[in-house]
Image (cartoon, one colour):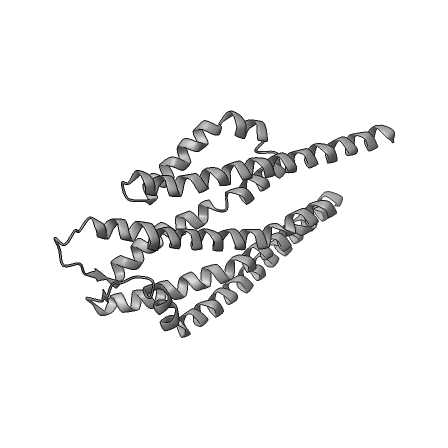
Length: 253
């Protein structure tokens, strides 16, 4: 009888957790839709913000390209705006299972994730407008009549900026994995050369075949790795300190 009650209680807890998760996903989806609508309303302002930085006239060769621009630009606004909402909902969902000091430490991840993503987008956009596009246009040297379609231009822009924005989340990912005990500073130090190689490869994949451009992208990513390493050391020291205090309390009792 007791085992049956315990089983029913576990099932109820699981149902409650799933219901809470569903509610939080619904809230996130509603915010996404709201930001999407805002992006859709201000699509012209967003579009002109991007095209004012280039000395080119973009061409739409089919009605579907116009629709694609509306949905893609509104989608980017929705994704950026929803990031802090989504991260908070995830944090709030796992909050009951965290200790007080863990709650205090992880709540700071929410604005950091948002700011790093924005910083990555800004950096990627600056690299695209100031370095990548001028380099590619310089290859023309008057040989061709250049015409950019809206679809191709913005797809190329997003292909550069979004991966860089994701890579800018490296410090948060490293801190989180370190706090879980999955990653350690010693592991990062021992595998530093492999990490550098991976970041350089990422820089090569994200930029045209020009050494300077690849260096401009790879160096900030390597700096981010070193910053992540220092943050991992801080998290790891705190983790060891908490473990030591816990062990001392246990031995005292």
